[in-house]
Length: 112
Image (cartoon, rainbow, N blue to C red):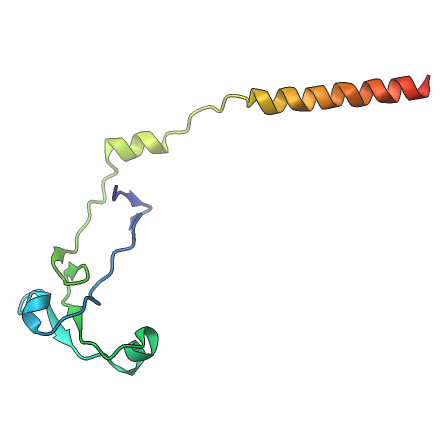
């Protein structure tokens, strides 16, 4: 599920970078172009393959998605962000109390 957390998507969305052989693979002419990698890109990916480079306003590996988001928190996300009181964790609490009772008993028996 792709929802926003503090204005950022929970899943990383790459902007360009999809392998291509022509500008049409990247939605040319309006969305992106197929370009040869520069030196930095070659060093990062260790590849000489051409990659999509998206124009402003488009995203995705092949520049196929309009880059926009809704700043309003949806009711579903707002519900997830609502703070709910925590119930005590009884199994852990009971184990702690049992160990504590045994320790007190041992100390009491050893002293007297």
